[in-house]
Image (cartoon, rainbow, N blue to C red; front, side, top):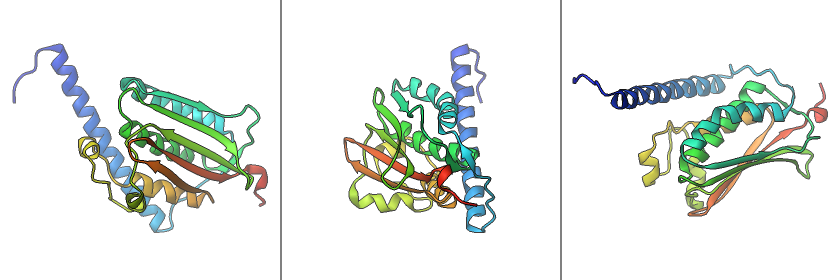
Length: 203
């Protein structure tokens, strides 16, 4: 109702509007994507995907968010890492969902790492580790449920849709992948996801 004249106040108000719009857009897109998956109408276009290219794209998106909270983010992929068989756009969405959670639940000045390797089952494995608040063992099954968020003070402070991890797991399943996690309250969390390598897929 008041006229904002100070540039600093104007910038803060515009930033609030931007964040609110982004939050609403994320909610709408997650609901639409989940509806498509449940209706069997999600169409993917898997190809032999260079994981390094996708991670570089994700890094450009997430770096400003990490910098804003002084979080140290590093990722490593061996130079000879083989292509994975996945949909590029959905793969970026999966990694962004996990990194966004890491950014959200890791305190200012914390660390977040991503490492890619080939596991004993000849799958591409990506491990994303943070030094965040962690998750109690009893609460781990709850995070995969739709519209469900763990009731913590930091979660009340930073809003979320409660759909990101549900959608992430279902998108990975459509790409013949899987996801699991290990977590220690007060220490941090590691999300691991596995995908087939392109040379292991037969038409």
